[in-house]
Length: 429
Image 1 (cartoon, rainbow, N blue to C red):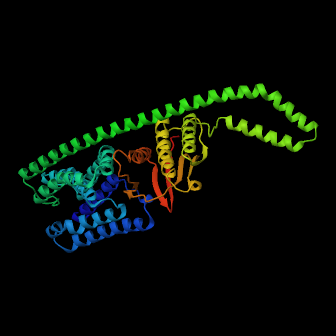
Image 2: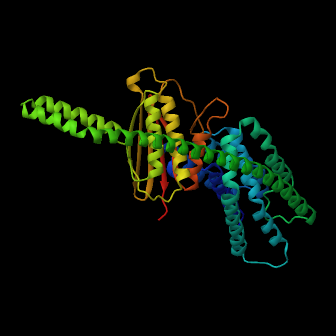
Image 3: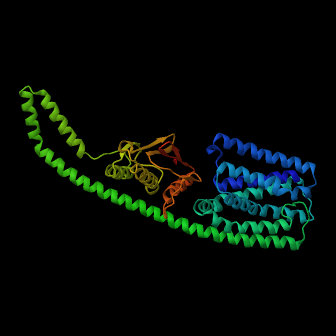
């Protein structure tokens, strides 16, 4: 039974860390995927062998060396997240396994003898319940801490789970089958409750900050949409005036073209027709797709790109109704295009100032791809472009949060002097 419980505990820790660090095996590179799968399988196999080869007390004393350190190294190598954040995540997973250990300890304390399979089933059930708690209550705000707090802050935060771990390790954290005194059980429960309250307070602060920044982001998007709508209204009014002038002058245009044709000057007629077509096209409002909100955003950034000397190309085919709210859709587009145009406008070669955007629906997924040229160096941290300027960097993280909300995918990639943003969001049916 001991080997089975240890393997279950290891699996719990691995899955809990995947949730907290938002690790998706499908999104890992081939080398990272191999390291993650075979590395964790090796840890499981090694501990099964050790549990059968050495006394259980010795195995428990080696727990850090044979389980925690290897698992830490695996997650650190595949995620490239700073070591202190991985440590905090690891010991948070250790903290969350305690209720399952407590239930098992209490059951073993009772005089009623149950079949070994029942003990194991109860332990797995409690582990699954704790994973659900992690997924729905810990995960969103834990990710906010990982992405927004620096390493020095995590050194302080890590004191919480580390202190809890040391206290419980001293009290025999992993000796599942050893009979405990009531005093020890009470002490461990008290430690757990105190640590849980501290976690709740930390996450409550993170939740408040997250919600505040989300509201600020939504306000920014709404302001941008309002500004875009005002510009569109002004442009439409100008267009209507110009169209009225063209309607009034149309008979003069036709008369002049007719005179060219009657005089056999067909080339002059063709040139004049091209000139009229160019003028009409210049005052015709652009409509990229059927979605009005997206049209407003794209039109706004088309004007902004031209004002910054950036070539702006659009390939958009989005219907009027999309299951993603306009505010979140526009957050994705406005943040992506704002960063792209700003970066591209700084390129010295004016012919290389380019921004491309692709928006389509494919197999019930919203696909957004933004590509822009840039100059200089871009530092990537935890998969995000890192900005040293105060107050910057929220846009990229807000995009990632929206993608995570819909179980989608958001990635940033650099190839040469081209920066690429890819977003995939599953749509509700």
